[in-house]
Image (cartoon, rainbow, N blue to C red; front, side, top):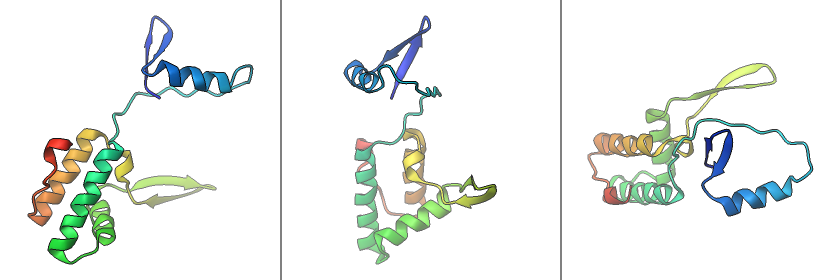
Amino acid sequence: MKAKIIDKQIIPDNEYYFDSVIKIFEGKDIELSIKDWKDSRTLAQNRLLWAYYGLLESETGDSAINLHAYFKKTLIPPKSIEVQGVTFEIDGSTTKLSKKEFSKYIMEMESITGIHFPYRDEL
């Protein structure tokens, strides 16, 4: 949830949602985590990405699923995670991209394929 801290007070962007969450935890011990806000890509942008994959599929003959896997592997650095003391890498994800990173991802796809992303105004 996005909020600002002003004069040691939490000011939520969506007070109604914040109040409804607070009510759920009323009287309970909680763990609170605060971090810098990252303006992540939206679900609407994700739908545009998959529309673009569909266009690429029709132009190249490669499936949208395979194109998605290829571009993630090629353009997004892997992430290291640790499970039971073992560290290994997993593929990067478009869900964790900021809006700016997402736009760059699209532009790099255009550069690789030579096929224009027709929804640029909607990013």
